[in-house]
Amino acid sequence: MLPLSLLNAAQNKPMLVELKNGETFNGHLVNCDNFMNITLREVFQTSPDADRFWKVKECYIRGSTIKYIRVPDTLLDAVKDEQNRAREMGRSARGGNVSRGGAYPSFFLAFHFRLSPWGSSKAGVIACRVIIQKQRRL
Amino acid sequence: MSSLQGYVDRRVLLILQDGRVIVGTMAGFDQKSNVVLSDSKERTFSEDDGVQEVPLGLYLVKGDQIVLIGEIDEAIDSSIDLASIRAEPIASIHY
Image (cartoon, rainbow over all chains, first blue to last red; front, side):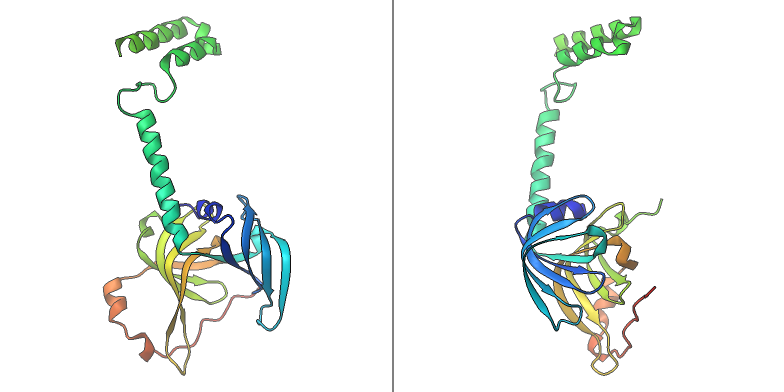
C-alpha cells in the first residue's frame, strides 16, 4: 500500500502532523497532493517544546517540511478493503468471457487501430482483420 | 535495485534523523522511501528507567527523515526484557 493512498484516504479524518522543526499540528485533513503538501482545518498548533499552543482555523503545510503524520488506526483496513474492491472490479471487467481484448470492445480497438498512423499500412489492415475475426469467433 | 518490498508485512525498526527509534509493521512504502507503519511503537531509551515503548498506532514517516530500516527477528526481540536495558538515547542529526 502506498503512503500517498493512505493520505488520500485520510481526507476529513483527524491527524497529527509533526514538522522537522518539532512543531506539531492537530487537525482534520482538507486536502493533500503528491508532494504531501496538505491543508488542515480546525488546527491546534504546538511549539517544539510543547509549551505554547495556537488554535488555527485552517493552515497549509508544505510537504517537504513534514517529519511524520499520525492517522487513525481504522484507516489501514479502510484502504485495504478499498484496494481489494478495486482489484475485484478490474478482474471482473477484464477476465471471464467478456472479451479477450480487455475492457475495451475489440471492434472499437480495431476501428481505432485502423485510424492510427500504422492502421493504413498493409500490416495494419491485416492486423485489423485479425482482431475482427477474433471478435467473431468469440 | 535496492527495495523495501522484502520488508512489507514484517516487523521493522526505524531510526529517524532526530534520533527516534520506532518499531512497527511495514504496511507500505513508495519511491521516496516514505513508509507506512501499523501498530507502531516508539522505543525511548534512558539510562535511569530502561527502555519504554510508547504506542503510536498508524504512522506515515517521510523518507527523507529515515536513517535506517531493519527487520526485527520477532523471536529474539520478544525474548528481550526491554525494561532491564539501560542506554543513552540516540543523538539527533543536525546540519
